[in-house]
Amino acid sequence: KTLQGAGPFTVFAPTDAAFAAIPADAVAKLRADKAALTKVLTFHVIAGKITAADLAKMADKDGFITAKTVSGQTLKLLAGKAVHVNVDKGDKAVANVTAADVMASNGVIHVIDKVLMP
Image 1 (cartoon, rainbow, N blue to C red):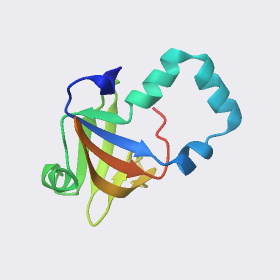
Image 2: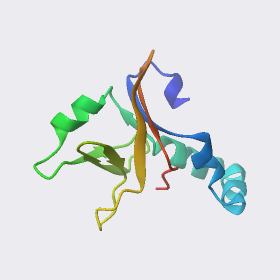
Image 3: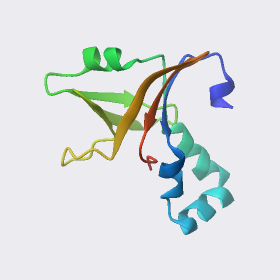
Image 4: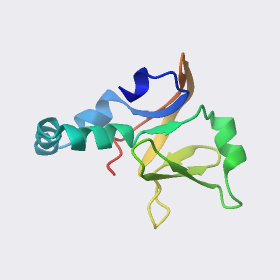
């Protein structure tokens, strides 16, 4: 329902291969728990239309951006020559943006290579 709204939104959308890499038992648990599934899906969405160029401008001196997702959790990004999403404490990227700035009627999509788990 969130993405059916007027937006704008920035969505970090995992590829089909990223979804296929999730263990079957984890998928079954998410399908059985609508609240948990909603939390995972909305963890990939930020309010506002943020392009790759915008991300670069928003970054601190070390290239990091912290954004609040529509699930209410924090997503950490690293912007440089590439954009990495949900960077952990060791500054290792969990997901990489493989296609940026796919424009949609209510925002922008950045395709990522992994599913982010809150």
